[in-house]
Length: 182
Picture 1: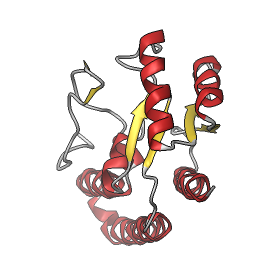
Picture 2: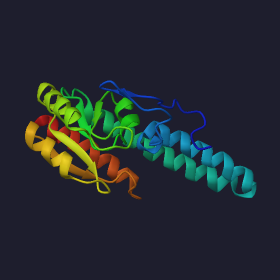
Picture 3: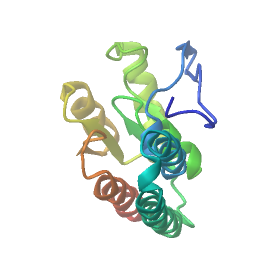
Picture 4: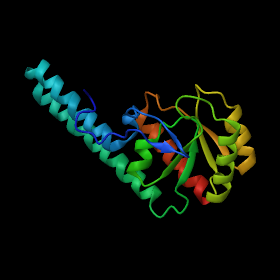
């Protein structure tokens, strides 16, 4: 269980809507990535005890890299006044929690937004000055583009499943900072 030891997010409600279960996007948080790494290390040490020196050294190096990423994200987002963003799919919930951000998803319970919910999001986007909507490449862009035009935001494609996890986390951070500065 790679999530063992994590503070998991369950049943987050959005605008009177509620979904149940655990948010599965745990890897999109540097803090959770450290926990995942520790759980992998424990399993690997049980399976390959003769490689403990190598495994522990690689783990230490990876944790140093994650700590560096966490420091970078914290510094870039420090003092950010506009801490709200939208995402089509609510994949950045742990990231938002870790860095005191506010994610407003378009998709709820795996379903596209209704016209009433899009209206709510448009009003919210204008009120909060939201100027970025993250969209995973796997999802239809139409609703995000309509909403972006309505609130004057940009649609930015992200890939939470990118094998270059570190680079994707830096990219998301830099977009949040750049769009908040506009």
